[in-house]
Length: 255
Ligand SMILES: O=C(O)CCC(=O)C(=O)O
Image (cartoon, rainbow, N blue to C red; front, side, top):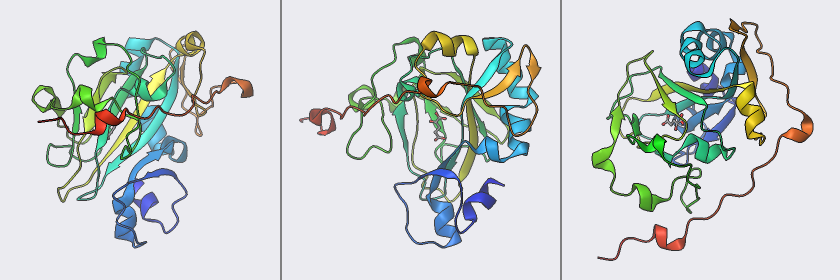
């Protein structure tokens, strides 16, 4: 279904183009350039009812967050064969900039995710630290952790190899990354982040427009389309420009 969407001549999805865009407009070129489809669960009852609003994942989220769940973020991540580029090291809450370190994050493989096709990598223990201000480099795909903190960390990371249907859940301060995909097997995953009305009101800063009710008082909200979680017009702020990385961080180490 996801492939069907992106292969259309004019896919009407909110998508991030891959910087390794091979250009051109053939079906293959379109398949090769998508890396992320934001808010896809709105478009698909199947995905809403079986993934973000489904019983299995919400049962785990409920264990951590309680009986009222709001979906804060949802996306499909695509790492196409040969052209899929790296996702830089980041903390999800480093990108959100709303101070939230209680949210529950998950990522479910739809294709096998392997070292060969750029599975996620996690930095053990990194979730116990602070939220680190993220920065933009001239070649950043999006804001990222300062590279001086992650350069040379290959020995320490965990590679999250998953079979289709497996999920990984993580703390939103966890440092994670995925490398490019030079292999001939693409990988697609579905991801989401749950929060609660309590966390949202405690954080006061709301930078997300598409909040959706998932569970109220222990009952799944199973209608489709999903019910928006109401936020007032004036409540959504824009967090502002990303700081540029210090020039010296982009320069190679002096030998
Ligand atoms: O799928 C990927 O490679 C990146 C996913 C990710 O960074 C996330 O879900 O926060």
